[in-house]
Length: 406
Image 1 (tube, rainbow, N blue to C red):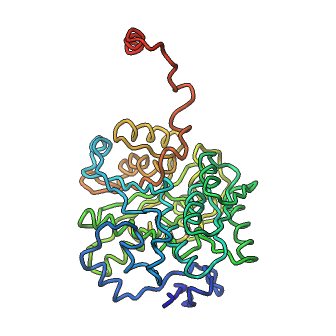
Image 2: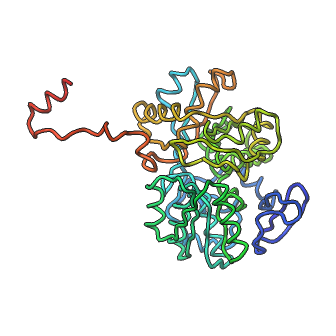
């Protein structure tokens, strides 16, 4: 049985096999339609424990028609850790800070959504999968496509970390490096999707949102309640809107009493959603970006930006941003004080804690979850400079003693 997709603003509805991801009537995103009674029944009961795959763990709340395909798709994506902060939170005076470590098989949060996108691509017999990406999503789609035995075409913006490009190449994807930013790469990807039977596994894909909302389910399952606030890096915006969907569903099912305040964090170098939030607008418009040490979340025309605005406002949260200097400092702090190595975009949620606390957005007695969305090995050159690498010393104890005294 195939699933239905629907447009919330104009009520247009279609079958998932149509291949449509954006409403042909009003241009809004299409969403997966769930059996609400079944969804609420699952979420109100004891939620499933970890499994060999997130797809199998959450199969009853995901649009999966052929469960037997999971074994042909999975790369072992599993529930991600929720670790209490041992030093950063206490130093800030916040009662309970947790880190949701969204670092999957390909070292970022993207695997959670990609796994379902590829399963649906196989279910619907797509000849190829594609995506426009700043790097992490491209690597994830390349890996899962290789596992599924489907060709992958990834469009990446010009300025991308070489380590991310190499991951896509290693997994056999056709990498198309576009002379432009994410808006340019996304437009070119969409034009090719219109010409060929390719599944776009990026932002517009409703199955990506469907899968990524399971991160919110996991937070509640691990804490036994909803946190007071969740802070999420915000580029294309899928992660934030997915969290909102998860907590809304949990509240409607009676599993939680309140929805956490949601805070999206962008880069000061690329903050179109923050600008719209601060100006009181309901629509995010493209902006000119500035140079940044981060290549991820450098999305100047976020597909889910308007919905991120709604998520932040309706939960009493906000959209903010951090500078390069702030996230670089936080990368080092997370490494030295918490034993966690995050990439620039992965560290911004924690970097934003200082200003959110100073502004009164967060309170000292609250439970706050920060999502860390990418491993530092995606961009190691940002955390450690070349001149910090140690020189070789003679293999003698005297040389070691001399070095220790320096």
